[in-house]
Picture (tube, rainbow, N blue to C red):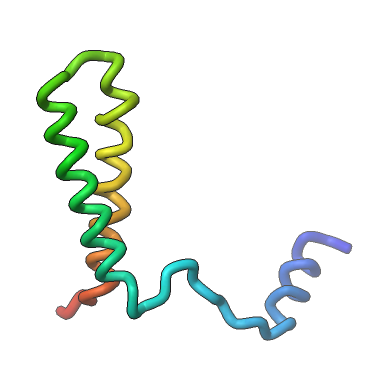
Length: 79
């Protein structure tokens, strides 16, 4: 069976996509992630050396990125 046929079988199975975070809780998850990002950014600002980059800096940037996406998805984008 080829990869194309395997994908077609999955598509034809008819199982709906179930997101990890539901639409009703995206706002709370996004707000929580943005608050954690703010907290970690403040802690990194108090002690900015190479060791604290992995402890505070990278998790803060990830939390900010994912939190921003969740907030955009929660409130919607209207043009």
